Image 1: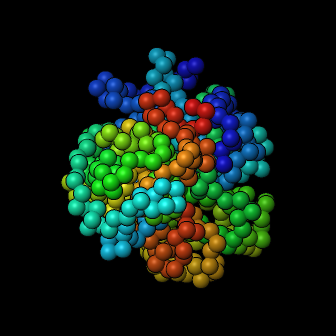
Image 2 (image 1 turned 180 degrees about the horizontal axis):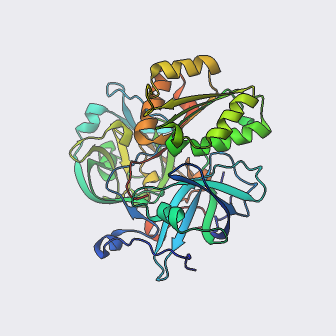
Image 3 (image 1 turned 120 degrees about the vertical axis):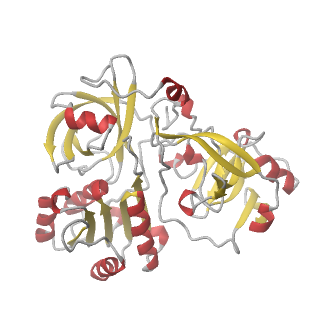
Length: 201
Length: 243
């Protein structure tokens, strides 16, 4: 049903085609997080891959930086309605992380864990085959702390809450386990093109 | 904190519109979850044009769940705001607006969480904090609370009379204003924050809401003052021109 008196301000056609339903284009880069930006020291930073509670491999910052780096450019979509076009990230793909650890994904699901105790779930199928990376560069420079630096998960085809900031590791889980927001009513999968914002969408 | 079931869109009737400041309007909606949300939560609003084009935005709830049958949003008119401009210039009592909620389970406070409760708001970031204060006054008046509120000028203060009255009438509540563009005005700085913390005592919970730069600065001050990061919750709005 139309809203009385609302005409709206449509973006140009080229923009509309790239905007998932309910999103608007922003030029700046909004910051959303649960609390203060954690203060992380690269000297003690670790990234750890776990199968349940069992560590598979852990990397120091230098070891992580020594892995092959991949560039990804494209659009990102936040569940709070903003989308940002043509962002450019660099980091280590999930595939390269697994290869460096010498393991295959032991289960079909993963929980990304952050240094701020944040968690979010992503199916392995949405991480593998170049679909996701642990990013360490944004727009050609180290990722600023407010945007999740030194390293954040990047799963750009899902709503951006899945791209956990200050990522400390990935934990493989037997079942699809809800993370922080998923426990609070947000969608388990979060496809912006199907507008999966909340449970039941 | 959203109910376990799907969040359904509902057509919410506007039952009241009141100017709050030059840029902010209070808009009251009749909704079916008016007594089933937690202070700090927000709603999504969706407007539809005759050709089906839609625009969605999120707004924090300003009222407490004790307000019978309605929720209050406080909508700030942004320059070129597609949705906020509609509420500033077009919306009228009796209009039915698509809305769903309540949403969000991190930036929330109830009497069960206890205190002391430190609230730090910049500009319209005070809105979800107002919901917490309004609920506290009814549900947990013994919980010590302090609101540190930064606005540009005196006339930009949201709910100014109400906040002053609460500061007078509610023994456990302290109001600290930082007016950045008044003569002799100041921003929230280390001295302001330290004084607030000394007055309140160590907060069990701190909630910081405002623009990105405001929230970054204020939450850094709290961490510097020794407030454990895990007790600090933040909510931000970007410096976006499109809201």
